[in-house]
Image (tube, rainbow, N blue to C red; front, side):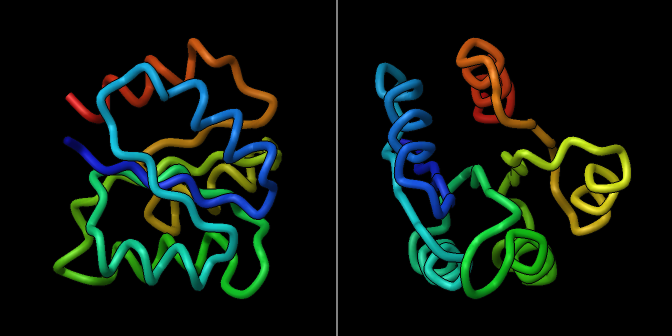
Length: 120
């Protein structure tokens, strides 16, 4: 079973994303801080991380940079899932190493399609 990490400081977002993906065959992991997300990524090596930008501790951009800088983790797909939808913020996320960028509020169907594309 493929592992997928949802890293967001808002429990309601983790719940919504988890519920959206629950019917799929993924083991859902959750983190509420950037530091916790990085620890889980290093320990569990999920196939994909849905990563919020604004989180306590390390922000999502720094978590993304650290994952992509590690040869053991660089193949993990990272989707920035955030309310920051301005072009310069999207560019900053992509420059940090994100593979995809999805803005909140997002369509559950759009999320499912993106996860399905990346995971298969």
